Amino acid sequence: MRRLSNYRLSIDNGLSRSLFTVVAVAFLICVPVSFGAQQSSDAKLKRAIEKANSEFIEAVKTGNASVIAAPYTENAVFVAFDGTCIRGRSEIEKMYRARFQRSGPAKSAKIDSKNLIVDGEFAYESGYGEIGSLIDGKLTINGGRFLTVWQRQPDGEWKIMRNIVLP
Image (spheres, rainbow, N blue to C red):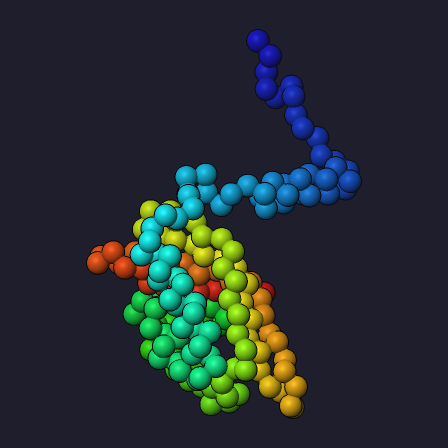
C-alpha cells in the first residue's frame, strides 16, 4: 500500500505558484456560485425585480427617494462602492434624498440585470447599472457592477435585503 505522504505536490518556485493561482482564480470565476442553486422560474421574484429596476430608473430621474427605498426590507443594508453601509430602509431613503438635494435628479439611468440565482429563500441578482448626471453642463456617466440579495418574505413576496455596489 502506497502512502499518500510519498506523493507531495511541491510548489517551490514563483512560476509554479503563479500558475496555480491563475488556475484557481479561473476555476472560481468559471464555476457557478452554488452547484445547488438554479435559475429562477419564480414569477413573483421576476416581477419584483422588473418592478424595482424600472421604478428605480424613473425615480432617480425624478428624485423620488421613497420609490427607490420601497422594495427594501425594514432592516436592509445598502453597501456603497466605498464600503459605506447604510442600514435600514428609512436610512437608505435618507441617503438618496440627500443625494438628490446635493446633485439633483439623474439625467439618465440604466440597469442591466445579467444573472439571477435562487437558493432557497434567497435570490442573488447581479449585473451592471449606471446613472448619468449633469456636471458642469456635461453629461457624466457613473456605473458599475452590483449584487442584490433578495429575500422571500412570509407572504411570498420578494424584498431586497442587501444591495452592494461593487468596485
